[in-house]
Length: 230
Image (cartoon, rainbow, N blue to C red):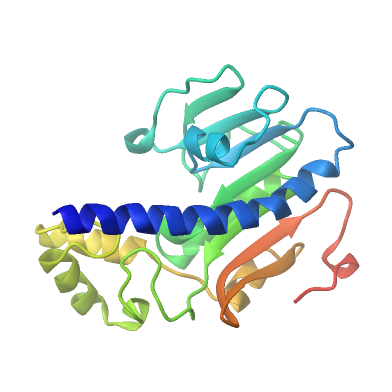
């Protein structure tokens, strides 16, 4: 148990380094607003992320949207925590926020149809948006930390989840819950991300020459044709 605790701490530290490097791209998007305070909708995130990134929460405002099961009360005056569904954000319209942000959430909403629903909502609300997700073709699956786990048949993934605590995920003995987790963790390819976000610039986050994650960035007033898309 002590070994696993240290391993999870290491994974968290490793992931934080990547997030900080990735966050510099997001700060470029914030800079587009000329130094004025910006309002951000964080779809599926947490207040701790913004604190860990050193984001200026005294100047900017962040609304964090999560399912009821993931909801946590905010502790900062400029962070608002709300309950909602990333695939159906009907309470919001374009203009309610300057930027829509989502980090490592799109791969958790379920089948491709639900991923498209989330992408459509992000694009509807956000004149500017920043959406990151792990790359399907990266050898090491980022949640379970089993090489090529995403390529295994669903029944095999389910059985592994039932029998072992994998990566940062706990062991889930219940077969229905294990299957649900396997089904709802669906990594995307670069081609799929381009299809979901046709008006975005596509950035690739690399390690050892391999694409670890994919980031789609839409900057206000620009079309996909204005970008040099990777």
